Image (cartoon, rainbow, N blue to C red; front, side):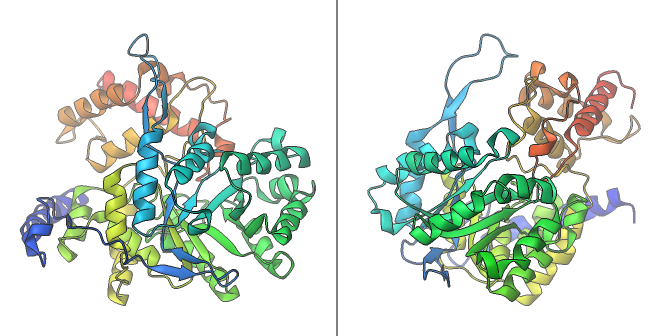
Length: 468
């Protein structure tokens, strides 16, 4: 069967079944028209996991402070100028307080997040919550990505600044950030040769760092090396990217990724707790083609699409907490429902996600951008994440025509071009990329960003000139 016909048939049938199933909730008054739970969220049902190193009782839902809500800071002079934004601190305070009130006690930040302002915002929100310091755990990182930051002095300064911005005397969970990017040479330059890891081990012994670990992206040699030396470093936890697509098919979403099954099993056999990042692949496991959404809705009509990914990550017994970058209250509320308490996946559901749903997902040629914004700011003003996210959105909606002979060519052409101009100011679009490659070294998904900018710009020009 042609893929187009398969999608057409499955999409129509599954969507009808899913909409019909929205009325099947146990308590219909707690289900909205989209089939989502709307009832009161319990404050005492959060699922917790114990850290064997310290006995910490950690909420299975962790708050990732990388995608904090923003507000417009000023008015641009013209429509092509970038909109200046700043963190909406009042909203961050509200979200953090609500999370704490409902059992979330793990907050993950970094000096690199939110253009360098995440730690400060997190510290303000936690202070404003009224909760005592021993009622929550702060996780932050040594995000010394640039060679200018690789000296011992700069590393120590970064760590001391984290304590200051977070308004705390100690860090509960400290990570070497993004090890694997740049391979063994970068690991040695950032942490080993300069004595910085020895400094962190000393701080752990002093209690200034309560748990020491690392987050992994990139070269598997680095991951294996650090685990092979676990007897020397005694990692208290390790942060990995895991979701039901990356479990077996990480190389399908990015040829240089490592399957999460391998990463998880290596931690499990050493008894090291895992912290999960990107359970939604940067939101891509929510913003999926309609027929995949309908397939999930057929199974559990009253559950959100996101809940499948969070149940999947939380069902692995070695996982300490699952991070979610919850920008909006509805994200937080939905995830709280999923983990208050967690209903673990059945073996059948787990296998179905890893095989059928994951394979459906990777059949779509989306770009593996997780909207982390590590590639920003671009020295030439290009809004790289917005360009990639718009392209992925159009792929999912069937608005990336292969040729002018495509059945929906005129509709798809208009949707792509109009949406592109609305999503990305013209001075920040892909045609301004000069291919300098400075963004690539910062991308944890190791996307060849200049190549993608060139490809998207070529596609846009062909659409404009009707030359597909």
